[in-house]
Image (cartoon, rainbow, N blue to C red):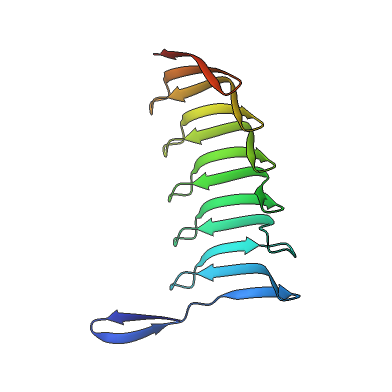
Length: 152
């Protein structure tokens, strides 16, 4: 429970935490804002490691972060969002390390950055864009080493 004061008066706000239990291991955890809007949902395997999709929300109800886990490690696509519900970033993971395309966007929806990972190492070409969509910097990577960059 959380106690809040409004105009000098004590105002009680009950924060609800729910869980599903199996063999005394928490399987799901839910947290809520004092407004009763969901704050987060997290799932755990029988060993207590994060598993499945964990989601964090802004108080407005928009998703803030959506992360997928397997055996306690990042797995699959993880996404972050701006408070206005537009996509902020998307990263591919495998076995807890970035593997694939890592993209970021400006709040106006235009691409901000694109990088490629292979087994946690930066590879290929990465791009950084200006807020108006024009290319700002081009990076070239090999084996997680920056080998060239061009500023536009």
